[in-house]
Image 1 (cartoon, rainbow over the protein chains, first blue to last red):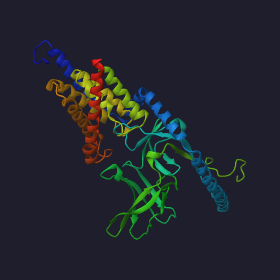
Image 2 (image 1 turned 60 degrees about the vertical axis):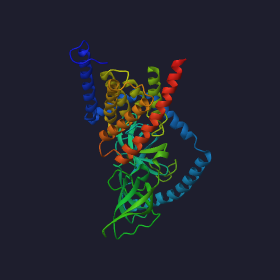
Image 3 (image 1 turned 90 degrees about the vertical axis):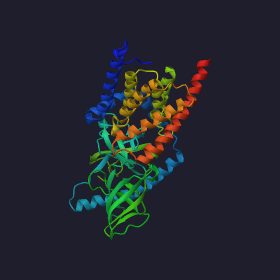
Image 4 (image 1 turned 90 degrees about the horizontal axis):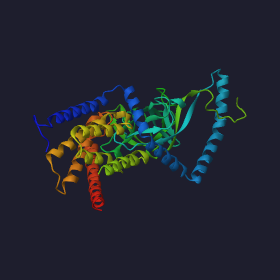
Length: 283
Length: 152
């Protein structure tokens, strides 16, 4: 039984209480540290957890290697088909630009990365990628999977970066229908349960018609996401406000939980996306 | 007992970070902390809670500090229960772990901030209760394993 008052152990008890108060102050203080200090502390702590993050990397790599050869072959075939069409379009675009005396369109440079998700409390809707500032990755860089937009980088460090996927409440992207007829804003809307989380195409003028099943892409407005990345397809009307605005529920193109290998866009570059062959046929 | 706590801590990080399990894996860090807190003085329990909370915060940049606060408070509370309950009853241990885990999730939810956290009903009531039952069940298995092992 602990002693209280002026007993022989009261000094120890006082020291114990002082230590407890100090620890509690430290714990509350961590929340109010400047973000740069929080990141430094976090990086330091991650060094301590390196064996576990290394294991995570190994598990992710092993999971990615299990992809079937047939699936890869099918992807290669569809890419080859797409490339054959795009070459003609690129050539036509280049010729037209030359005729109009326009500068060469800038492409995007990207880094392939492995995505991993810590399962600790507070890390929901966030992910880690194994590329960082030394690879040219910066905050606000879009993250893509072969299916479409996965999320965006929130914080880039030297060797890795933390991102949020489209299920995060802070996620926003300017969007348009694939034919460019309707523009709006895509946002994540939380349901009462995680399974009710939805992607919503919002801010659509009431008089504009959006058909079910139409593909929604990033519009490139705002400068965060490049134009033309698949976000999802229209499932139905989510809400109507008066007679001036409509919002639509989307079926997301990319499932963030299923993404293992992604592309992280790093910056615009004039030579990164070149659909011509290695001999420079179209230069 | 301390070996068991160390195993629980290690297993927690293997499951949650190494193998990326989320809610599917039990919160063994809180279980280990609750067990250790009853054996430690108030100050040491708070210190251990702070360190384990910081380790969890390493991976949650958007709510940095929430785990530290939750774990420190729960460890402090766990150490205080030593003076309040003897804990001889068979029901005490799972009930203590259930209450500790549920309180930890509630404090974490409160500390996270409105822009990051899930709705209260989902995260604190439903997920919190299910997670607490899950960990309490693991606690029962853990106590059986430890008592069998110590009798040998």
